[in-house]
Length: 250
Length: 95
Length: 201
Image (cartoon, rainbow over the protein chains, first blue to last red):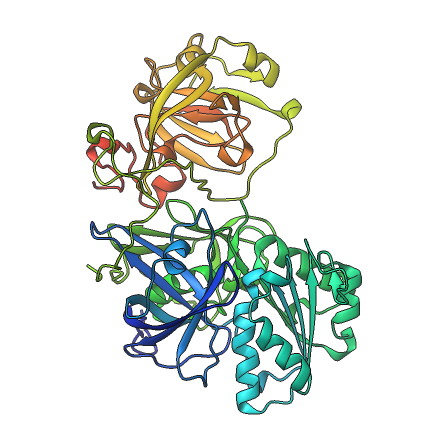
């Protein structure tokens, strides 16, 4: 049995926690300095592994929130109250602690400049995380690929990266951001209300003639629904990339 | 329970194949549907990870960690070149 | 071993009575949902439980008849091969002894099979003499679909992958024929007290 090249290894390494940034009441960004980070592509993820004193281990995957050109590796984690790993990462982990991780991982759910656009990014809840990496990469390389971002979350308080997204929507050329709030919205809310449906996608997505490259990220049910609706509208399934989170993260 | 997708086992697959596998193309042995590993429906919370065909739900790939060693069964998924060489069971020990 | 993550304990609780926790297991108060595939939803008017294979005559009960069979309520500890153990779980169901009562067989093994295609193999002696049930209630309520409802096999003295969810029947066999997880490397018997997790353990 022949192999073309030496198999590469994906090694676990330690990453020092530099800073914690609270994004929402439930969500925190963890700024990290890995021992030996090889760089990454926007959209990739890392596997994080926790080890207790008696050897018990738990492992989860988290999308990389930082762009490839950013100084530090950043993960953004939503604390799930009945979770096992996320209440540790958001609640116990402190600057100065070491976090074991491996990565970057993933070649399917990535965007880089040569893939061009226009881009349709559809995020549900913490599905917004890899899109921050994509948007930061886009800005860093000066890409003029046009972007429509549709972000669905429960309420304004649950919008992760709210200030950053407001700034991008206001000041950055070619990036159009639409928010839809599903559970609660201010009385004077001029954005969208309710779950993503065909009508909202027809309004916000690119015309099918533009043949956008579409990325959908979020809980499984959200992704299934959005992808199915886009295909129903006439979008090309081969130009839709999906990444599903489980009920306790990926 | 909802399935995740092949992205969730990308790290484990990298361990076994020594390569990024989410974009690897294969054909479901049950129904003939062709697609990438990233789009398989993966059930993680089990004694192993079970990847199923998104079209017919047939079992395509099963990943089990036996005594620290990753084992992969691809009988349900025929990988296209360049990954179409047979993969040995009992691959490198996972760290 | 990896370096210890400061302050990480996992979701586990302190062990109450070590004598009740098999080696390598951790106590939980949750009831984790583990699945190898999508949750089936067989309508009850299409459901039946069948015993066939190496038997004189196959037997089958539709749902209403199954519920009318003599039932038992039992409180047992359960142990999953993924290392969680849950103590004092209460189930109501039909003892496999009751189901096999009128079955004429010389088979020594069986394969339990489920909606969705899952299978697991067991020795007949592991499901008789009060060791196994087909359970349709958990904690006093009808068994939820994600936990195997309408009915699942319950074999608490073995690792819980042997307690097949969505069970629809038992095929009695002369030989021990590895089921789903057994084919991928898990142990044919699966005694948690002997830590029989994988083939060869």
